Image (cartoon, rainbow, N blue to C red):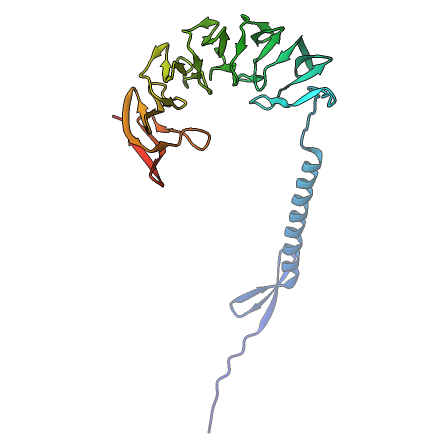
Length: 304
């Protein structure tokens, strides 16, 4: 005879907070009704949150302001003279007025002159000041913030120049056959010529360097002190801390880099013009490209 034991568990309905719970032994399973209520509740919360976000965005659009700063007369402006200030808030350019020219800054015309120096129009680094070279008759001079400076026979191309702190102004000028640098309206020593890219302010705005020529020799002038003469010279550069000066110099057919008056190794060439330059990586290190035969080398120097 075979016997078997079968366990039977009955389900008893209980009422808990208006929700039916089916009890099977010791296990409870909530009714589907409760699950649906919870799902609907969370769905409603989600929809409300999305609605609030959209409403807030709709009520808080981006604020955009526009204001005119100038109106350009394309029939009279000289396109290549157009300048934008470093802070991107101001504009300046040169226009023709009959046989005269004048600078327009933020839509306001300045005094008319017989000519404005090519590539001379410049904003200061802080964007607050404007300077340029101008001509009346045969005389050239620099105009800074609408004020005319002393007249000369010519003003060097690429000048005037503002110092990094925007407080100082320097430029090259010619009287007769001699050239010289003018810094803060003070004329420095006269030379046969001054080099392109001159003068140059140090990063701290306290020092000035430029290249000059006497007879067939070129040299660098730093703070009015002349350095050694060479057969050719590159544009000088200040170190980040403004304490050092470096430049390329030619001795016969060879070139070397000069740092603080000390000549480094000679090479067949130093790339110091438009194609490249001497770069200070820090106050105590620099690098440049040098030519040996047909090979170009990267030269890195640590300055002691």
